[in-house]
Image (tube, rainbow, N blue to C red; front, top):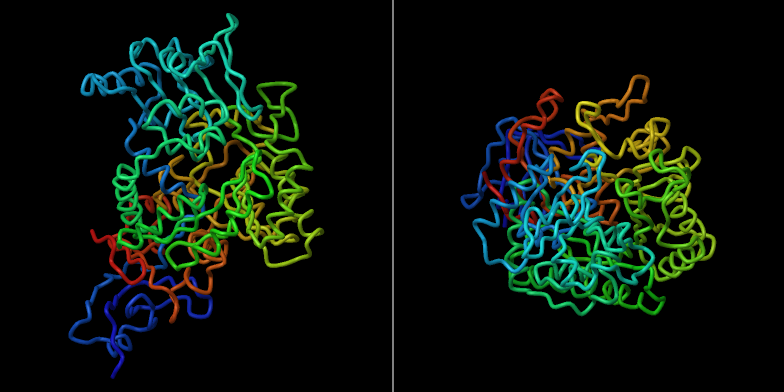
Length: 552
């Protein structure tokens, strides 16, 4: 029997991400594998009467985007909440929420997400502000980054927290001078005690709220509905793989169940979420996840930690004081000894460790833990990861290459056009630290491998917007270094380097014969499009596992 392809795409500008064969005209697919990469003429030998022929129209055809930092289920569930990211003032917020309430007067609670920290200039948002919007129903609003929740008085009353509550030290219930809670709750150890009382927030409470909320009830039918919506959106954006950044056996089983019925339209790597209270014995679940989930669509193998919070709420862990809060550096969620011990235990079990580390002190403590684990267990191809790296000290830059650590960063997190657009982050750290903030080029130049992602639902999951940010970021002041990325480096960070960051470079991340058929066809040629208009490009077709999952 002769060679036969199910799909052939010709007349394209094929970016293969394969240095041995960087550019081609055509790609052929049979079942779920790439069987040909080469010229238009040679591709014809794979054509049969059943082959679907697709004209690439000289646009870019490339490996499907791999988003290396994603919250697939949480982000999908949050699609049900009122989106308030466009609110720039309290008045804007009032209008958006009031309109929703008028259309939905009988909801038990009003739930919103996406709020910016600088909604009020020079003033903290409190329950009293939110009471002016709605007083007789609970109102819960999550920040855009998921590290702060603001609630009105009614929500605090239902949770029994109006007068505060004894909580884990990793969270903060901001208190007023009169001894009552202001309504601002920093980090999940604080806001989880509210969310657990509201069914719509069940998944978020379970994922981030801590041990006390492990048994919260989850509406799986509702979650399947919203996960399908999240998957449709990812396919539309050309995303064929995500590295999930929260998880456990239950969540991995959930994705595998979706795959069993043919509803999973991207590949997902699922970690085991480690919390400060996690014991060494608890890590057995992470090992069991590896044994249970090693398919090409759902696989496990990571242990995910949080070392600190975020700079916007002063919960990021810094080496020096905050610029706008003297005598405060933030705090780590783990002492050095605690993290070293847990990192060594994870490493000994063959787990890849990935750590949320925003501040420069958090990054250093994370790298110290990786170095400790390596000394305890010996060097191996561990590919441990640091997530975000929003601030880094120059002394720590070469340690990524020395230790073989992946830098997972998110272009859309960086302020792109400051001072045209104000950003509280830059006020927190002060101008003397700007040059080593979101220091993509410093990190890459020091020999680290960069894997790019979005951290959806913190920002848009659209990789084209991430590419635009990486290519077009402006310096925030005269004389600052240029951290803009080249198009080639950026695309590698969204494809091959993303696959490498999850030990899957032998299966995906390139357009190469024998690899899994994950591709995205764009509307234009990225390489002939001016940088300032790249944001207008969009996928016209997404193929995952040889199956067309989106077509414009």
